[in-house]
Length: 210
Image 1 (tube, one colour):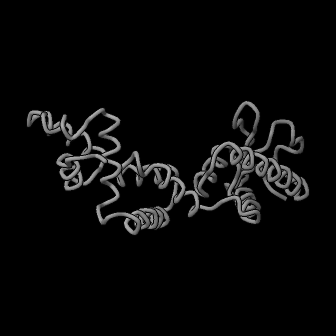
Image 2 (cartoon, rainbow, N blue to C red):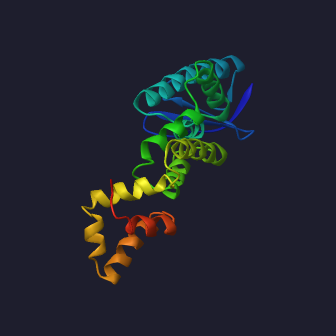
């Protein structure tokens, strides 16, 4: 038997049943029609099973629209009112089908953004997507090291700076013609994005962007 402390509204569609041991179970309104003071074990198990099914469907719908890291998906489910026990079962279900892979997601995000963002910006992006720091750093190191192996020895970040300069309609000739203060403003733009100062300086001194 589970003694109930209170039943309160969680959202327009859901109610949160809070138990005396401070645990909780969020259910859709109308699902629980039992005693307001205590819940029978069989009712608790039934509701937990039903909400776990809803949690799996919710997680799958989220993953169809967008790739999520493990922690980001957990937070989504937390925001939806699912308790830790149900979230654990949902994550276990997803893992059984290999639907969650922080390493693959991190590597994909680095590859897709390395030509438009600095390493610092990519680190921020990965943190915002709830990628663990160690996984993020490994992905950055892996992707950038591949560029090092296939390049002429220059920092891969230089490619990104040159590409962004081109998007700004800048050429080596235009950069060379800039007054000192305007050149410094241009450099500052890249520095604020997290690019290394030595790479910025080298890029601005290139005689060709080819």
